Image 1 (cartoon, helix red, strand yellow):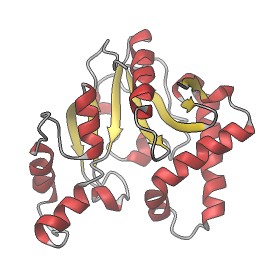
Image 2 (cartoon, one colour):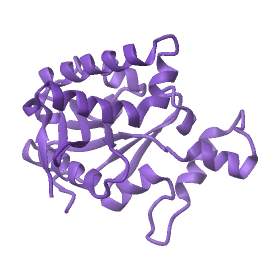
Image 3 (spheres, helix red, strand yellow):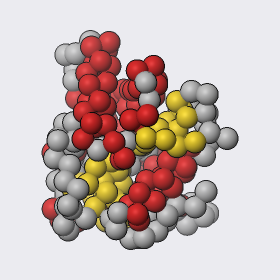
Image 4 (tube, helix red, strand yellow):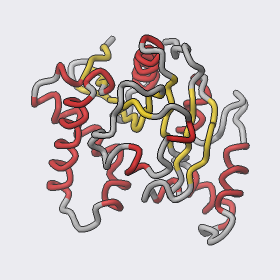
Length: 228
């Protein structure tokens, strides 16, 4: 069945596995953000960031374990209102180190969720624990998410990435719903399916080719826990 645990409970083997899942899930973005860095060096660099996140806010760094590490979620606490949340991913996460984490603030910012391919249901269990953490600490859970299918959609519709009106294109994309009433985007739609709402579209928020550099700030209702 597996279980969600704090990443602080992991030994170095477990931390290396967790970092491997994270690295493989985000490799296209990480390479864009660090184009000159060899992959092995980049992976070690990300492990140091993971260790920093655990040291600063261990309760917010979660891992799903079932004989091996199958996924994880990163989060920190920021902001007294939603408009205080930085519009650039690097600023919101302090370049992934979470040094700006402030337990006196009101929002649990979930900055990344990552799952080893082929493990259906792990993301939901991780989000359930993250939203429970928010509820237990009187916080509102805010996924700092990404429209991962946006570039693919634009290429299908236009055959290229338009140079203008990308925000309008994104609004139209997010308005396209599946039969279940959630966004067709695999990431945004997942959060909507579990109960989250779109709060803010952030342009040029991260060097992310799949999302055309957009991030989407979302929110789960305060006190709400994703059911598993």
